[in-house]
Length: 177
Image (cartoon, rainbow, N blue to C red; front, side, top):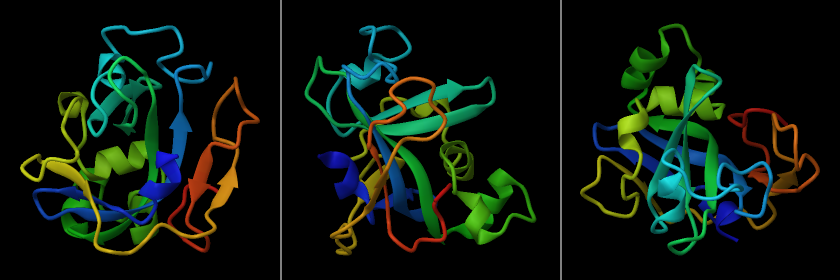
């Protein structure tokens, strides 16, 4: 329910970096593809905490990824932020990602998004709803699309057919169509 409603919200870092969320994937505790499927661990404990916090994890030995926790305490569910349309603070995004990246390439994947916003493990647990946090999700009044594109999630080996990925129609910033 939360995942498609996050589309068109703003992902804001307190140093001026701002991006519009254009692609997300949902993960629930009963989903074999979710980090929470086998229950709470030291790595995933944030996902079992309060909704509105950020769960950050390291994947493939090289990429950080961030999720918005979306259930009540004790239930491990969240939304992976897969892609942003960069809006403000593109110079620091390029500094973090490497010069020569086009606007489209800055945040069009979960690892790229985290890198562009300098999200690493120490950001795990940040309250995304607290205006004083260094990273927040906020609204500028643009509603979620009435008819977002729905598809299977990307890069999974289990639960591959579940339609739990949403993205903004026509956005050139999504990771894959």
